[in-house]
Image (cartoon, rainbow, N blue to C red; front, top):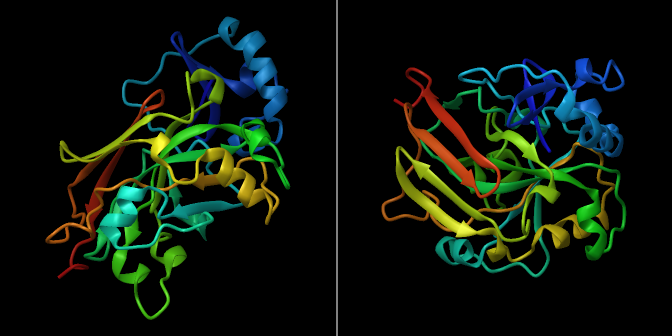
Length: 286
């Protein structure tokens, strides 16, 4: 199943078009996508039995997709989670997942432009996990059962703020408004041949700048979900950015950062593409 958000409403997308979840279920599920995650198991069962026969709407020509989990109660990031990225950044590979908070006000959808307000804004394409059931102390073997689905994300980073001072400010440096675009939709794990091994890439203005496979994650999705659940209670709709492969801007010689008018296209096998356009606020970078 593919779940998306259009005009603030949860919709299922298939080859025939768009099914409005609230209308097609006759009110059993509300239009709010956040509430859908609280009923995720029931929604999956309903969609499997009813979505294909429900009334479909034509998909808009240029759909303004919003974040598939627009208001999670918690959003997490995993740092230094590909060996090649650790090497390019000159960082040690962490023994346990390196977790930081990505404040939820930073999340955005494909319809929202990325505002460039500082000169050190960097890209990081990532596989993003959305949680579909409350989870605490999960074993790795049970972790996928708590996952609603996967989507594409950009863990946009203000490198100057992130590395300011003696102690890195990962959470603040990655949480300015719009620094967490995700989408365009969520894909349930059963749609993938192997959800642990997906091609992932990012292009900047048509140039491929990152390219890898998620099987290269140091800590894979089950280990991340299990580890987080050993410390916090994961909640339906929670979002986890799983880490980025090599090719980010600050590690290049010379460093390369985003500017107004840039277009990022982030791709993950079996999900599709997330397009992020940048807008530079006048006078801010001068």
